[in-house]
Image (cartoon, rainbow, N blue to C red):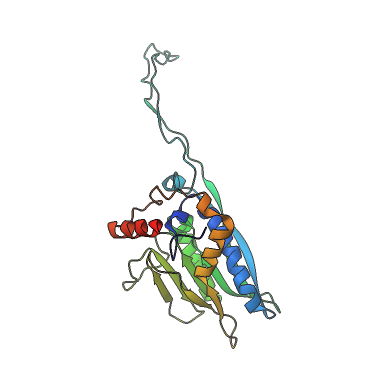
Length: 257
């Protein structure tokens, strides 16, 4: 069953996101590979970050856990070793929220002659859109720019902070950007909930024509292949943040088609 939405499906931003992220990276590589041969190859690279503050993603990306428990105790704490004074029982017990290891796939385009990194395609993860990891990600962006690497960033998550700010950046839920190496500019594709994802250029080495990436076709393909419709309950609201009334009304009409 195809996705009911022409562009990004906001229901994919929740607990399915890790699977979506991996599948989309693999599909992007598959779409690009025939265009790159024989001078370039697309490789999947996995890097690991530690989400040390996962509480904001509990119930969205990570499974629900018990975050608090009020304990009713009838007995009192035994006397201390040095006196007959009893301590007050703690009425609240909280579990220790442990860091979560997050594996993030990226697509790297390398030349086959020297294995030099030419372009990097980053699909943003929730962990890279908030502190403390967003600072590390911003440093990575700068390293790639300094190393003369083209950078494509695909942000299909409404929550979190963008890795860069600009006064002319529109207030849209999704954003695709391309920073060509040492160009001094960022090409921006703002994407509203109602918009299909754009078809974008993928820069290669100097003197070579850009490859072409059909993002919407890639997203629709993985939706069908993974059978996400079998896991999504469209009678429930999508994951946070809450959508506007206009967007909710539009989604309702789409789901009734």
